[in-house]
Length: 112
Length: 115
Figure 1 (cartoon, rainbow over the protein chains, first blue to last red):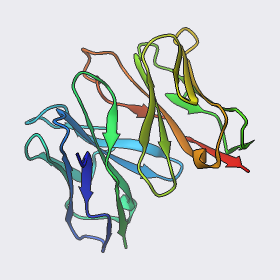
Figure 2 (tube, each protein chain N blue to C red; figure 1 turned 180 degrees about the horizontal axis):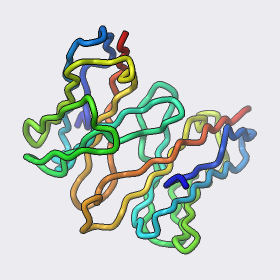
Figure 3 (cartoon, rainbow over the protein chains, first blue to last red; figure 1 turned 90 degrees about the vertical axis):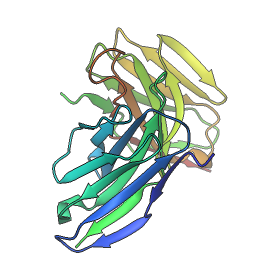
Figure 4 (spheres, chains in turn red, brown; figure 1 turned 60 degrees about the vertical axis):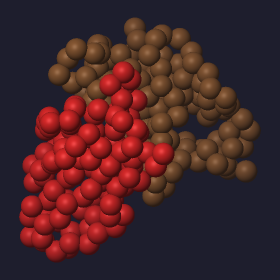
């Protein structure tokens, strides 16, 4: 099992460009999450999907959109990147029976 | 008041000592508690989960939960240089609510174990 995978690992964008961060899990988990991690701010929830077909906003959703493509995949889209979105983005997944979340390796995004 | 407060770090301990990491939380209905370890440049890795009051031991790690005091701690016995990392505590509310499954994280405590 690969667990949770994310692509790309690194990305540099110019202000105003768009991109999609991909996340997939092979653990048959129902719930998936997108976080950003910034120095001094900890991990903050952007969006989550409790189950296939549902998505909900987290703590910091502005400037982002998500798609739960199927049970395995959950993507995060930046429509018009801003320097404030420079961060490390982590995807996580959770099995329904437990609250334990398992994280992917992360995407380090820089917006110039 | 912040939802989760962790030891202000960084914390430095000699090899072989016990490292003690602490976390307090403000939400009295929280049910599930977790400790994650994060090496520099890597993703958070779940090392302990605890759901009921008392101690839970796993190898050199012991998690302690006191819901009445809204306090959870992590003890690392026989600390090794490989334990040097940032430790994040997190909690989740009980099942049934709209927030179920969502984790709230602390800021993290940097631990350095020196030889």
